[in-house]
Length: 414
Image 1 (cartoon, rainbow, N blue to C red):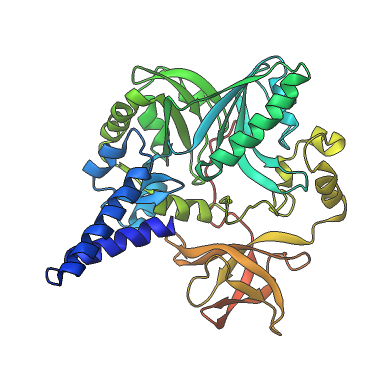
Image 2: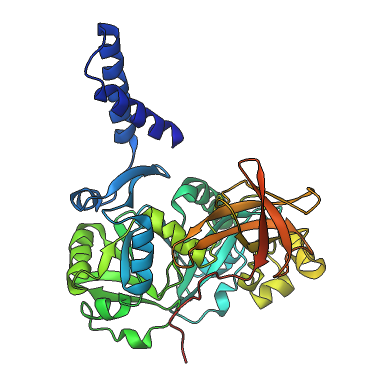
């Protein structure tokens, strides 16, 4: 991705020059052509033209051309989501269904959730693990019924996730297991988030959304389209993820914006990152990776009670041992002074000893202060523990704090 951005930047610089030799002109044309070729390789969602028409600044992300922001600043977009609402295009993410009499036992061999214990039409965050207990990806998994599971995996992990699931499914089927899958490439995914999400969406469906709670799932008609609706999100706010047939995605986006009377705004990946960080939510590739277990990531709550007792998933031996004895490192929330720490900023003790590393960090638009997440040695993870973060070669005061940084507002059953 960095190469694509660099190529585009060089092309713009070259095109901006109005003088030069024939060789320079040739170079400019070559760079411009390379940038166009790079952009052509990027996949586009069904809303690409809609984003561009509304001022979306498109950037490469996980092989897709996605809006990082629109006309608002990232700070303004973040604040508007918390005050009113945001509409995100997250169609780059991968939705898929597993179906069959053994769909749930098959999935449970790959994830830490107790999927069988979920009520029909409810879901949970889970983690795909490898044989060492590390995270292959995190996902929201929904039990539609005993023979159908719907899940969404991260865009950047799509290829490896599908290869991983596919390989294990083939082996499972050869042993007589009844499971098949369908990747929902015919659908787009919209995330409607914020306090106006429910009242706005209610205007487009006959379903009573007041009886639909956090993590609930329904297949319903929205704006005349057959949609998969999950009350969930990645901002800490109340909201929904709407899987809609791609041919109806633009019409649905327009309807949601119009029904909110302009208060719900199109929002890009920049604000989405600020919002999820304020909510203390992991970003795979930063805060979770192949060598980080769910226990180390502070996601022990996502491991079902039965799974903690029985195991039965990849890397269970490592994870169950960590649950019993404690992990060597733990994910923590951090407040810091000075410039905002970023991914890979070193965490050191007062004597300069390395005790960890920042994985995500930035300036919180809502709190007006630096926030970050990172991993520190076990024992140094309790709220109030003080240390230093190293930013551009200088040490700055930092302290462990509880997460989420901004209180969540999920709509839960009374």
